[in-house]
Image (cartoon, rainbow, N blue to C red; front, side, top):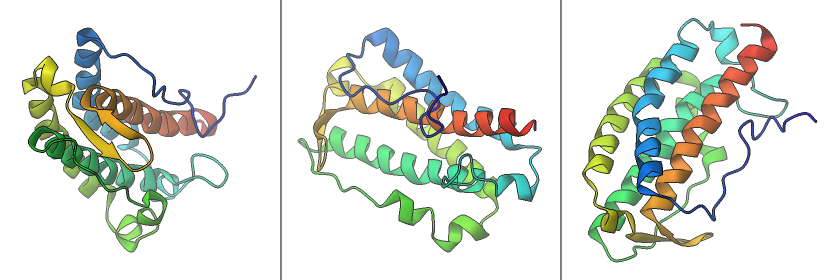
Length: 175
């Protein structure tokens, strides 16, 4: 059976029960994504960067620019949940963000640098949290109440998910 190219590592399990050990692994994923991503795209041509990972999907360029867009939103959600009582958070139209001109006109190195800086800050914050702090929540308009442990698991999955879009395309294309 062929994998669904939209979900090369499978879909995220929202019913996950996150342990202390899993949190360490998830934080490590957040810490290591920028270097892994840089390594995977460092020798790609402009044409390769503008290749969609699947029919009707985003290009590698769009995926790379999407990661700091998405992770900035998550970082802010973590900060809100840590400083407010179950704050209501706002969603954003990621598919429309991916079509804005900064996605097409900004060199991907700019987003890689942003991702590196963001993930450094995010990992420092995550490594400082207590078990009780990971249970703090925010209110998502679609998912309801989400605790920070589950959000961390989701964004670790998100890192691997989009990295796999790139690595699977590279395998398929023989790059």
